[in-house]
Image 1: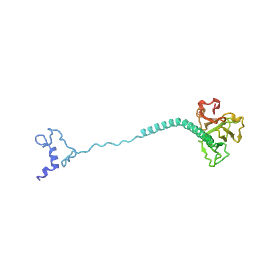
Image 2: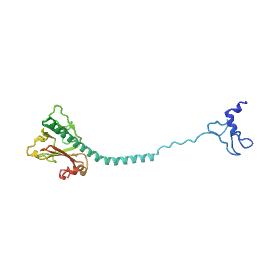
Image 3: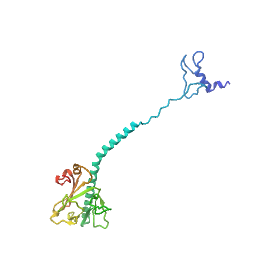
Image 4: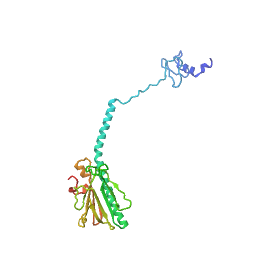
Length: 255
């Protein structure tokens, strides 16, 4: 029993119990009538009502009103983003088609200079695989810089981008399905055909104008502003690309 009074449990009980002088035993240090201080981590005496339970925080989630409000805000922002991104995507497709077409033209011209021989560039409209004679099929073109090579690589242009040409008797208002431009060893245009019609020498004196514009649903202003042009000068073989801001208003798809 003597050792029990010096145990940690007995010391904790004795320090918390007030004595006849209103103070706890050694280490208590409480005044008369004051609640004795307990140290966390020290067990209380048996039967004591004092506990060390910490207050629990109640988990709080989203209410139905908050959730519906958040979903509505997200849907509203997405609708605004779609309206703003749509014209940019259509314009990007048109510019990408003109860029690929111009790259194939430049490759044919450079190959003619390097190999010191005539190189024929060709572009054709891709027919509908399920119905080749379907005139309402989405317009899509492919081009190759060397149609006479042993391995002909065709580069596909983006879908729903129209190609119209002003070459010889063909105007920008007419639909075309195929065209070819042959560059000579001097990098000039030696020959050109549109839908099988070969241009004569007089027609080769005038520059060729090629126009790209979107066929997707858009306003007239959007179609005109997103149009891209390529001009080929047969006498010199110079190729120039420009946008709608430099084009003649009469050359735009929807004047």
